[in-house]
Length: 258
Image (tube, rainbow, N blue to C red):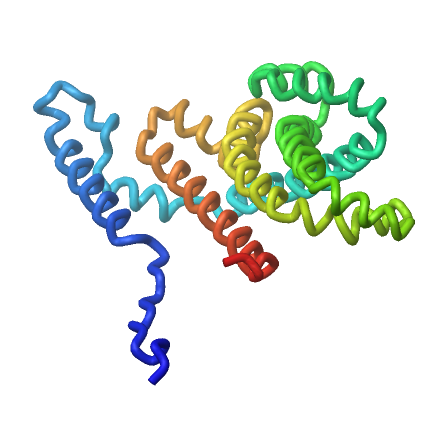
């Protein structure tokens, strides 16, 4: 009888591992206990709100602000991806362009996010353009560097073999480079999703009248820790949701991988 018939059935993976659920439960219990002990420890009651109060803040969340922030993140990531990959292809084909442009890209990546936000406020009048500029200038170089490094890592033998067929530039990238850099592209998306979620929150604090960052600013002015906690939970959920979508697409596209 084949050995495969005696193999144990695979148990479907949980969305959240058991250890994660236990950790979250322990944290929730400790937080609730600390919220009741806060007055006895000399901590203001509003500083550590109870889970019930946080739940009420979550119920009061406006879907419009969530949708606005999500649209800004997705739109900026798409623009960053297109510009980053296109620039990487141009730099790969032109060594002169690579020599002059790559140092500037590294300098852009070294500039702090706060500095980009201040530049955007001083340079551009529109709030949406400011936020989009900050997101693209922060996320775009990540797509560029990862794509360019992936192209450079393609074995020389494969490149010479492809060039022996005398392909056009478009055929060269579609047939050889694009399949080679797909794993790196998915990695860049995962990194940039987390980066964009953090950056858009900071960018929305400056001048925006909608979005999660604006609501966090309002909660800070009102000293509402429960609202801050609620909006932070929304950001975490958005991050996990977007990462899950990318992981699902990655699993489908790269199903040939073990």
